[in-house]
Length: 399
Image: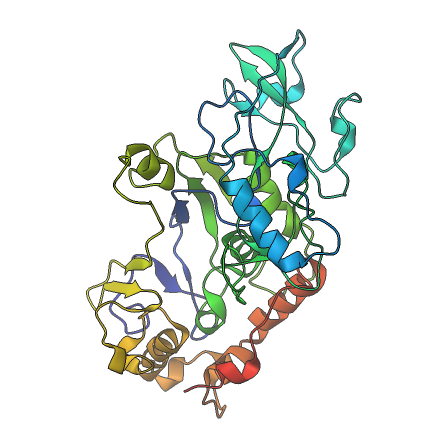
């Protein structure tokens, strides 16, 4: 609407020809009912928690030597998910003196699970591996700082990217390595799609507008805050997964910066979350399993709703699979066509400099000439995410 001259409450003209910027006072927030999959969901469990989504993994479930490692990893993960043994509680140790961390947020969980073992008590040995978690937390309750042992962590199904470190799959805290890039899905064959934690961390540097829209924007667009619904949550884990991993990226081009979002958690739980669904499920009514359908909604008058099932538009016939009728409105091809529609209504005198005088045809062509975005992406990959997976370039040569 802004480009067409119809006015916008979100964008205003920038200083550069054909460029737009977010209006003063406008900000973007990202809400998710659960912690993002991947690194942000590797959260320490409190041993006194009444209800835990995951039970501890037994020591005898370690992968034996001389077996098919891939098959054993799958079996090990599934055994861990169905484990029903209880968790033994340990007494809390009262600490009379308050630390600086205690002042961080009154009455809430204050964790001390950093990568540095120096912050853990000397009598608490750290699991092997630089990316392992410590097994002690500090918890503030009724203005008294108490120390608790940890026995396990909430696990993520996202798999480590090929070519990098693997999860050790040891009992308890040693099950996962932290800070690693991961791919979806949790079960089945891995894809080239990075986990939600990795994508959100990337957006804190590149912005969430992508390469195509960066042609029209004077600077990247960032989330000012990420809000997570009520669920197993750790502020420090979110900080590590979404902010710390990219905090040292430098040499970014104009319009890009490291922009860490504020991390917040709501006290409200999504009524149809996995935990609530399983809690309300009546025995004898079948097994609760994830739904393959998705609803994508946008507050625009033209095609605001997109319903898909297993990756295809809902209701499409088998005969139409593989055709444009089966495509989701948010797939790469359809988003590219939306961009081309924007390009078509842009007056030639107001075209961004990056799109002038160039013979561009494919999706890949238009992405590549977004030079500032590509330069920022290169800096991010080289400095923070060298193992970031990239799809075959031939798959991006579409019109």
